[in-house]
Image (tube, rainbow, N blue to C red):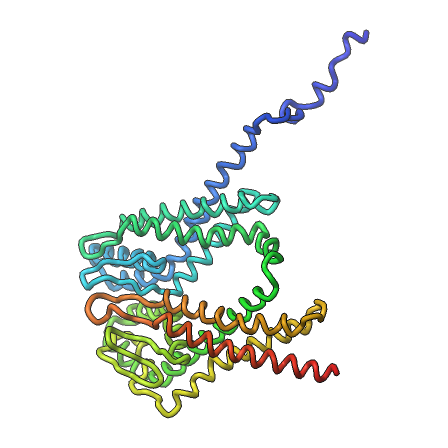
Length: 420
């Protein structure tokens, strides 16, 4: 065979789609391959987040459905269940009894976790981990937020009736913002951006925020323990409340679920009781260690733990709880810095600055927790339910800061003395 008859081997061996792309030429096929999976991943994973986070309220609705043979009543219960799920995201409800805005924080935490996981899966579809830009992660979070807003708007329109109204526009905006915060957080975590941005924040600020968050969580845990102990001591009254409903075992299970979804709210109220400001169960009411002024209390078994009289003789000792929480957080801060391999120049400054910042950080966390755990339950005197944010934040910042500073200083001084 002559040379003119030889086949062009280069053009036959290199497929058309693998040929080198000219500079500046658009990559049409890659856009089509990555655009659709992101939208699909956001829609599917966000829908799964809706189903999982709505499961507790749907179980409570199913418990009522078993004792409600009428189809009309069953539809009303389902509407109420999905309305309660919207309420967990901060969407207020308008009922015949008045506005309802007391958010069940247990459902809120579950929804935030599931939406963040949706952001993780959407970020994987957008290849955010392999990208050197933050744009894919933000794009994935925005897709999750858009899908969550659509689901929220659709459910708000579906559950609204004459006696129960959910503002659709408010629901869409609230759910979009909720999905944006949780979805972007999950997408950024999947992309590894927290570890990339952490070195940009001063070490003292990071340690101060971590120490304050630990102290705030310890105070809330103490509030939950105090609430559980008070409820155990009032178990007889709580049992009588359950029996008065006369709804059977299934109805009692639904009532227990209602109490459980508001357990984080009660933990925050218990923390405010331990810190000092206390909380309110209606307009003009006060429940604190130094003063108790109550009116009619809603007939929920979990509210049997509310004290009926002050602890005037021992109320000052309750401040030892946030002080102890600050001391534990300060001790952990000193221990963590002692185990680090950082240079020892300016060791006291690296310790005292975070200890001072821990107080405001803990106050901010507790104030935000009080803000999201309060809200109205109908009209009239029940328009104020929960702990006041500013008094709790101010007192906690001062007491926790003092405890963290004292414990960190003492731990560092003892370690220096042993080394010397």
